[in-house]
Picture 1: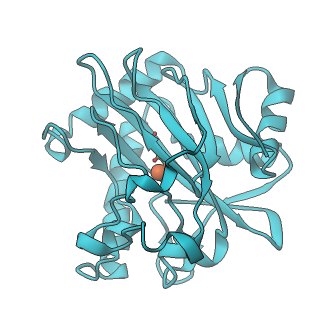
Picture 2: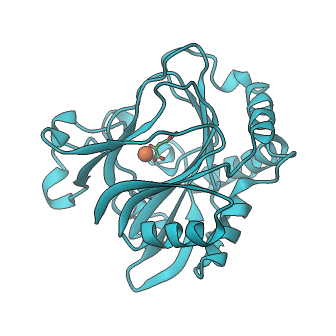
Length: 268
Ligand SMILES: O=C(O)CCC(=O)C(=O)O
Ligand SMILES: [Fe+2]
């Protein structure tokens, strides 16, 4: 792995398709595609999201539209309640993205154009996962990894995402801060369990940060409209925002299994 991030313009088609493959094949750490969404569509999505301000009007917390699976793992919710929630969220999401169309569909198309067989993963009983959340934050997040394969073994998606990645679209951001710092250390279930507070305290909220002591890291240089993809089994965090604009991002996960590396499943 070449531990660096590539920056490409989304209009640079041939290189963009190649960049997608390089990240999935583990040749480079991450790829940022500038101008994936235009600024007008980003700001419309932010305006629509903020109209639902009751989701996130608290300072110092990460606000969220939609749900991560891990939020439903402490057994206070059933899987069927999660998928009921997803159905409601998908209506809201369609409304938020009414101007641009749901970016997840553009992503699936992009991956298919790159020669992969991308789909939106369907649970046999419940249908599709939420396909993404919209996050608003003005604080740094804790260092963590995201891996349904390790954390969510009783959820169908975990059988289809041995290798997990994130795709983050930046909808609003100040010039400083609000980037993603990725450490050169991958989650290792045999060594990391004692550092990694999976499911303790009711949430999966991060690691004992000593785990990345002495590790090299790279930090992105993201702008509004960027799409950024990277493997979420590397320890990572969002850096704190500066200025008074909240950072708003739209993200979903995708993954594949070693034995079917071209079959890419989108979910969150
Ligand atoms: O950039 C974001 O908003 C989220 C970063 C992150 O932790 C992830 O994509 O897994
Ligand atoms: Fe993450």
